[in-house]
Length: 130
Image (cartoon, rainbow, N blue to C red; front, side):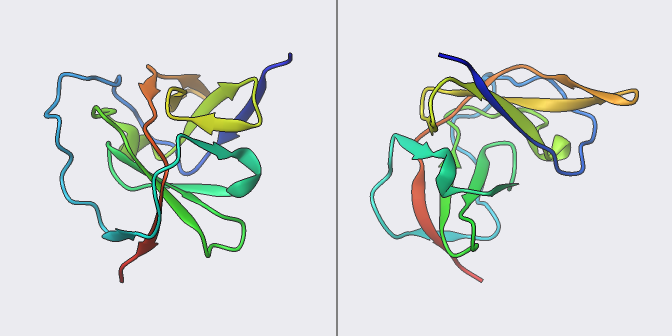
């Protein structure tokens, strides 16, 4: 089965390598969110159209109309993810799952270089608090 690659690019900046040597508990994320359903192990690629990197631990996957949000809180800090504000991934499936890896994109000259991998976590449907 062929590998499917989707590259999400949002204002890429310099990025340090991902590390799992940071504190286990992430700091509070802005905006805060309230879980509105049970966490899912996988999220079909067709369910989201964009992402929002909140910090080095947290990524929001946003549905097409913006009315659905699934928050992923990484088990370990992905150092520099927020400052890069972009990542890529590879999957041979039509979904992203908790065991998949995202790779922050580093700006190198006129192109991009894939940074160290950071493991995903469950996708929790949330309602963002204003």
